Image (cartoon, rainbow, N blue to C red; front, side, top):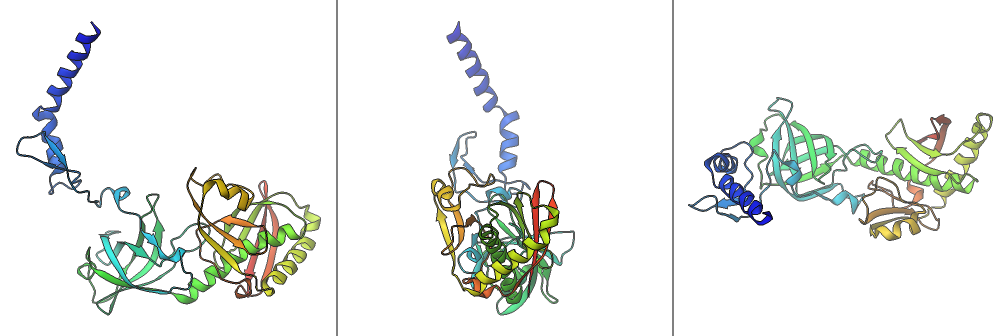
Length: 318
């Protein structure tokens, strides 16, 4: 009986798979004219016999785009990139002047990790064609560059397969790197003045920079702690200690290096670790950083206050 049941199910399944009711929608989806065309397969003259064909990503399935290489992770001070290849261009916000561009590689740091995105320009054939105003990293690893076309430029100046040059705002990049490294340095200073708190969240945006720690500092002691923390931070800055970036640290080594493993890290995946050399503190991080603490400049602790179950330390740089 079991054998007969299996045969019945198999017969019905193969009948469905070979029926026009099944084949027609599939072939329609696989048609290049269909808006959701996904050429995972090529068809033979006798459907439904499919053979695997070359994979190609589509605009409607961004998760299938190849991850963008983040050159910003490798060199904070690379402000120009001569040869990035356009992967996709999409008109957004219903305006022909606003487009979103995906590249094979980029020097633009995307918004995230508490750090503001880079802004800048795309240059094609020696002509500035687009102002990049917003950069985001998708869960798939694809980085999107949103911006407005320059006067006299059209979407035809940015076509898939074309090579473009990238220019980022150098002053903004340098400031963002200083602010981000300052946040990590505060972790070191906090521990050195006697507060072994776990850092949980950082905001390294200009004018609103802060770091949060799990712990408690009584309200009547916060002003004095702020002074001590600021003094220790500036002492570390003046020391000119190296800031070290480890690009691919094995998951099993992260806890030994950092003392903790953040919940947001993917299990069993390597991570990029930033460490103030000669100090124990290290932290998984995808941001841009200075090469030496002396580049940070003078730091001022603006306020220490309670934030739910954490302590929030505000700071700014001269």
